[in-house]
Image (tube, rainbow over the protein chains, first blue to last red):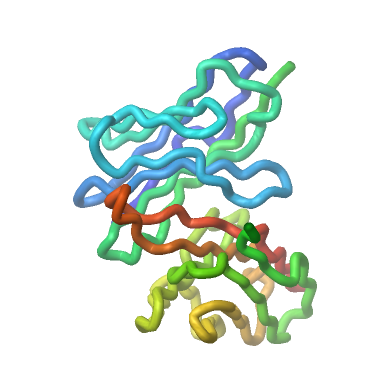
Length: 114
Length: 119
């Protein structure tokens, strides 16, 4: 079955430190890949997406993600986190044949220490 | 411009009652999706509308759930005979479906959700 896995449920990081969130997918072929962020009381906002081509993609708010086909991974990174980055992050995948409906990972909640 | 709106923002109901949740997509978006976010199941797909095509209902958890999209715009998700396990945040998203420029699916824009509590 097609699935997206985020191994880390919670991550605590100090403000100014780097952040990496892991995402693995299990699909027959490479799906379209996305990272969304959900801040407290806010809706889901797209950070970045990967369709094809350059495996390092840049997104909003200083985030980037790297696609690694050999590892079926699409990890999200930020070099220096800000207190406002405290939120829940969701990795998602979609395939055209399924109407591009999103399959989400379980989410990673990021806490930022001052 | 206006984003995706959903109403009500909160709904508390008694077990066994029917509820209707509304979604107003971004004008011009041909695709509309419903998702559910709950503590036990995370974020899961429910149903998808694309233009005039038959909806993809593959994510609906039971026949108590139904949805319609009138005039290719507003959508209503109906839950009949609500159960406590239906308590969740119901999210609606809309998109233009496909981006020729990006050669991939257009961004899905999410509404703020409706928090449903079944007592």
